[in-house]
Image (cartoon, rainbow, N blue to C red):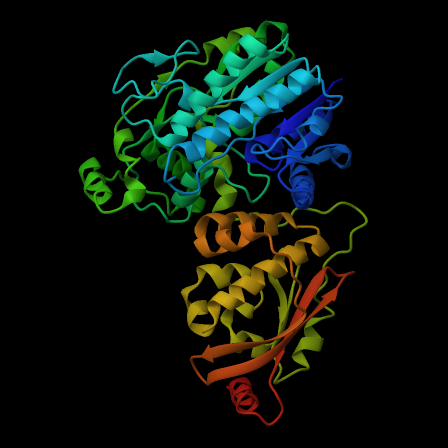
Length: 514
């Protein structure tokens, strides 16, 4: 077995690669931009059920700096270079994407060469293969390259082509025996291990949650993330893969409407919000005139790009899942599954002994959350104070997605900031229940506010504090809150109370009497 470095271990594809490498018996090192993300790697591998996850080494290294890469490649046999920047917003200048992608790839290749690594497998993209050719009926193969000056080539697409070209040029001129293999995936779908969603998954999530009322007339190729990871592992060791490119795709291109209808057919009620019709191209072109976010979409309207996976199938005996299987697996984004059974030795959540205690506080709102974030016990005053404090609800999810919470909390910005920094602290304590991870993933996609706060990575636990609520029945309330952890039961109890003899105390008593 080999020692393998995977760059970008917290990513959607990188985490699946690590899980498959561990299952195959390899030793794995991964890079993270901050060692604070090591727990994220561990949680994602736990969700994947990967063996020996505690043996994965994490090294802090960033594509924009030389620091850490010499340490990352020490003793490494193979490098799977997955990490690459993806735009969170449209860059002001294309070099904001092109330079980090190109320079990052070269930085990894230099480090691999200097350390005597046998082979580097670079994750490129179909974006480096089939764009800039205009409308064409041809089938693209590994012999094709994106025309970076052609129509519809965005900064991201150009960055993938430029970075891959630079990698091949480096190995040819300065590789000193280093082998290079490139995998060019299309849109990657499949099971999510953590809250860091890929762009492809955001599309499906929008369909499942009602965020896409009508499907734009856009076509895409798909591949399951597990198959994409498997192809990288095959390309890593196969002698015939040295110096080769491999397209990773499931089959024929599919339209966004096809994806939506496949979700409905496979998932039934879970995909009830998926669109059933296509938006007219002329309407999207009109909207693009006033919405800059749509500018890069317009050149892709109605364009169908076919590609072949014959080379990977024949040379590496690769057998990917179907388009429908890759997409339909994401139904958990619409309806989270019940929490999975926990490993032996962990305490079980038991709300039976807690409910009588909360009920004994007739004028003090109190509720308890389980490890998933859902309320498992609550008294009547808590439900009257906020309907999302009632049993079965998730207060965190409601804070960002329910409009009533903005009305209830006049200091909503402050409340949500505290909620997210507290969540970071709670995850460390509570070992990240799978359902909680799914909620984080959903909020990262569905709430811009949550996504912004989550990327700050602020960790601050607040067990006490003061909050203001604007209640629709009794008016303004200034309440203290206290949070208490029950470690053995894996529960968090939250209690609200007002200063004695205050107006808020009178209003809270009135609310409890309703």
